[in-house]
Image (cartoon, rainbow, N blue to C red; front, side, top):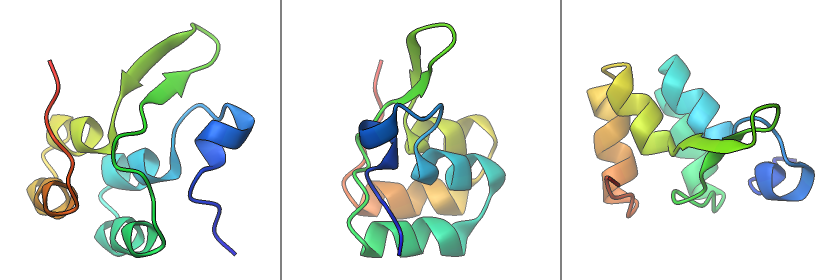
Length: 80
């Protein structure tokens, strides 16, 4: 079972989609999106207490253009 809302439930450092996007795991991002992952969830640094970005931000910062396109197709928008 995949908990697509783990970051909301447990205050995890990064939403699973953001971790997969940052790591370049297209298939994992696709699976999470198919399972209803929220593309607008802000990843959080719990130790420092601030938002670090969305899955789209993570993908773009690391040059994963295919993942960024996939996230945009799912409704993700650039912020800032």
